[in-house]
Length: 345
Image (cartoon, rainbow, N blue to C red):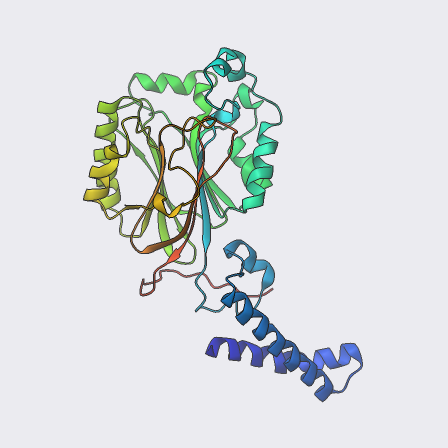
């Protein structure tokens, strides 16, 4: 509250003279009108808080309101993870895969439809699994850069899924395969980007990146193997990766848990991560196939320091998976590291 009063004082006395000159009023008339404006703004903000109508973090930079930007207000960040299956536009129906030419010539307008759907949600962070970064299938267009620009986001990290050693390094020289990647896209700048490579499996890449929103969080994007034995070994490696990170962690992606959620119980038990999909009371906790979900393959797992206020399975039909979305903030008492200062322009 002190920060609010201080902000109002600054607005009042630094702007009164300018306002009076611009409107041909006396200084005291200008001062009176600005004080009235600030009081009205405070009442509006108190109403918005009471009715839970405040916008999430995406809109804060537009509003530039001293109360909303107060350090005491808990920011809410919107995060989505989505296996977009290279924008081939198949929902998991068996007969759709008979249209094998979609591997080379996917629907032209699918990426535009995807952008339109995501724009309505205004994500702050987006994890993309199975994304094409410029092959002939995507007509040479990097889908990650395209989504970053169209959604008004500010940074991205992308990496081809296959390792650069062993026989799988051949995939880096084969058309289409050499552009099959996973990615992170964000409104906030990425720092300390790392790439972990599993010792087994075909899809081996795990992307790690830090963001400050406003607290430091480490994001991990992973796409696990189709085979259960290999997947079990990859999960053991994920446990080691997570436990070596000091920041709060969000681990997400397509885990291919064809044998059910019990496959990740060891991961949950041996790390601090939580699966909070039960917060979604409206949808079944299933993500594949999109046309009629029967199993859950996709996850967003979070550290206890992260307060998930909303968890949703989105009804998107642009691939064979359904995306997951969370709104999150931070629990009180968590130390903030490198908190960015947001000021008005």
